Image (cartoon, rainbow, N blue to C red; front, side, top):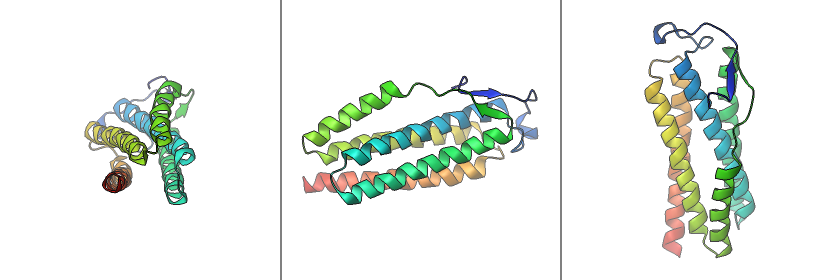
Length: 171
């Protein structure tokens, strides 16, 4: 994802000198990863809205899509404050098409457990991305923000897993 954002400022502070307005390259790279992970997740939830069979799930997926869009936006704001601006989007088409095909096949066979299982796997990926970022950016001035976001991600992960398990129990 190094190509996704272009660094405008020339100064690369060490971890000791890092501020919210001057992030080091490691922090920038990890925040870039999280922006992309949130964008992917928002897109997946957007597709899940179309696949959900009931209004309750559609509403939940809509809320989760908005949450992930807000998280990505917050992270982009931090990057922009440091002189890092978005220059291109990575290619999400192949991974999203793969996810959509798996989820659509499962929903068409009447298996909402399958849709929820795919969403839970997606939640695993974003949760691991946050955990990795928190390890790599320990001491960063953004860590408090990242901890706040990872708390929301964990809640979502647990909620989707609970919904999946309840759907399994009913089937």
